[in-house]
Image: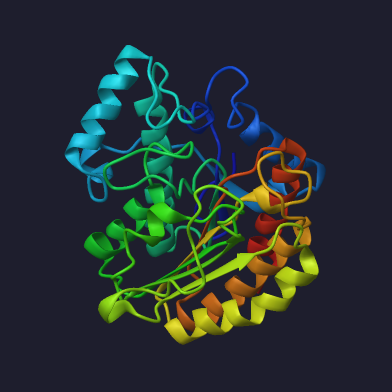
Length: 320
């Protein structure tokens, strides 16, 4: 594998991340990471990134965002290997704690390497678990690695102003409501209208509470919206991120917003993801020393997620 001292884009791959997959015919099953890497190789991009092995987070790191009670419950259910965390959509399995800890640890390691300039930008394919709340798992998300990253940036690196951009078809409720009253976490979430799709949140009038009013931007999209609709709203997104003057940018680039996903009804192509990745990299170069962390998020059609994530990584590589 390439060494991680040439300041290239870091991509996290390995068995630890692949373990985060639910058994049976669950939509969030296995093969996600492999499908993505096969597409990277088909596009000749595998040699243009630095491959990093997954890292397992310590419980202390996970509890920067999550309650101790929630983490202990996950550990207990992981040991038993049975049960569900919510209404049945997020089942426990033997080793689920360790699998989720690898997701968190890999995103935290990516932050470390970006902040220490060991890599320029980073992508973690099995990550961006944006539904988990501080005290609960839901929507296929056991731990919220994004929340842990935000807390790590603050406690470990003194970063205060953070921009989080979420283009997954589902509203990132676990991140949004955790930071709804935080004026220094700027959130843009463009998603399928919550009147039609889980989790049913993310209305346009939700723009932050109290001192954080105006620091959040929800953009609900109608079912069937495609690339043209995405490109039409993008200038609002980019202007908002520029206004935020962030010190770090996180992109959750869920691929369930592509046409043909079995769990959502948007009709983007990978071009939307490529555009988001490239434009955010340009903004990052202007305002925060190029710091961009991209996370795979959802996507339940393997061909779609492979193409969308590869488009994002290409943007991370090729954007000056």
